[in-house]
Image: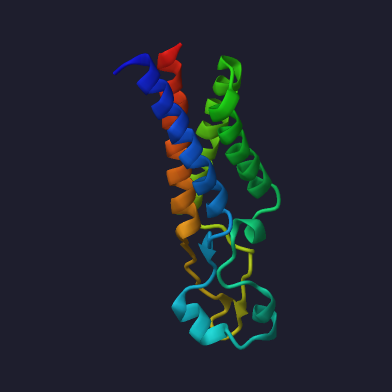
Length: 154
């Protein structure tokens, strides 16, 4: 593969990964409550204030902003990035990759728990991940592959 083709491929992967990562922040990142949990406790007053399917903007306080900045950096580096900028971006993408994989395995929640006096313990709940993590993962991987390919052009 020629140098020009590798450079174009790297840039396009980063340009495609950036809006996918940014768009993932507006998708559901967590289904807060399992179906069984909702059937039993959905009518409680405290449950009305907790979003059922929050986006990254709703469930995170600062990571969402960092992921948005990372998406912007992907685009900026694809358009005009130095080697040092690509190294920093690769490190940021690696951290974001680890974070997103963790979010897939342990879905983020608003910390809503209910003590069930009849059970004598907190009500069991099994939150699940939403499509936001998956799309975020795709955007991060595309961007990371693009950055890594760009190193072969140097």
